[in-house]
Image (cartoon, rainbow, N blue to C red):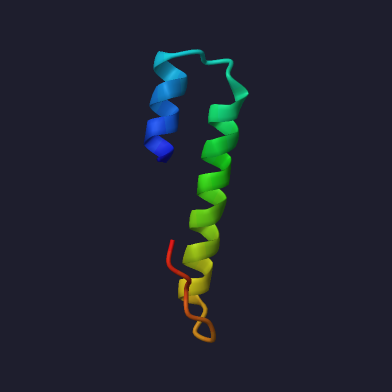
Amino acid sequence: MIFYKISRSACGDGYYADNIEDVIGYATLLKEHINKKNDKNQEPEDL
């Protein structure tokens, strides 16, 4: 989804802020998932 949103921004309206906000949101979810996976005390939730 991140690459999809980046391509939409690059090939479409580069000033459409929602695409960038979506990229930030997806990256945050991925970061949280990775942090949970690396934490031995918690099991990561399915994405």
